[in-house]
Length: 239
Image (cartoon, rainbow, N blue to C red; front, top):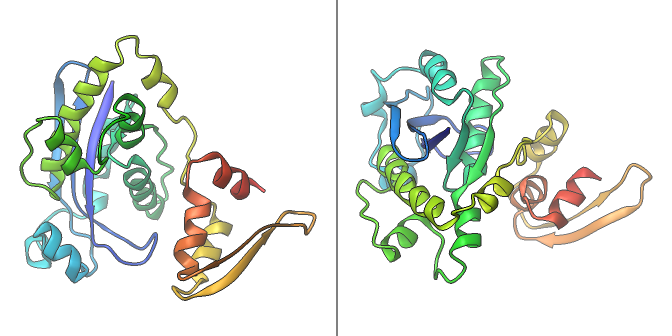
């Protein structure tokens, strides 16, 4: 069973974002058997560029439920499922962050349709959700709204399931560990870094330098190292 979802957020600093809208479609491999769609009051300001992108503004959210009021429903509809999303690492991180604020450890297996599309549709010109589904002739509406993007992901996932008839590729792509999740120590490191040009290095427990880099955005670069799923970054983060 799969929980195909999309989340819209306030934008803002890493791990300080709040959810403004969520859509979850519980999918049995053939059809949607349950769904949950809701605006969410994030109790914080929405970044102006996000308002422009999604059309969701603070006025719309004043009477919306707060996250703690929808948390139980999210747990129930995703229980014993694999969370599927386009760039699942982002949506899963946001959910875990929101649940952590409530003192709850939210853990699910995840499957990213970006990664899956790269494996099953290697010749695609773009793997952004909008461009990819349009190139495949999949109708999409309400882009950058949770339900519109979630429905597009449902249709994309159906196509990917059909392409992987033996379900071998999909099975191998499911992540069982919390990849992309930062430890409290790593969160503190990233949180204190400036969004400025600089040089940084990383060392292992023996003090040996294992990475040295110059970047135009220290916080963004270090966050990438801790959360990227490719083997090079995973090895660095573990050391």
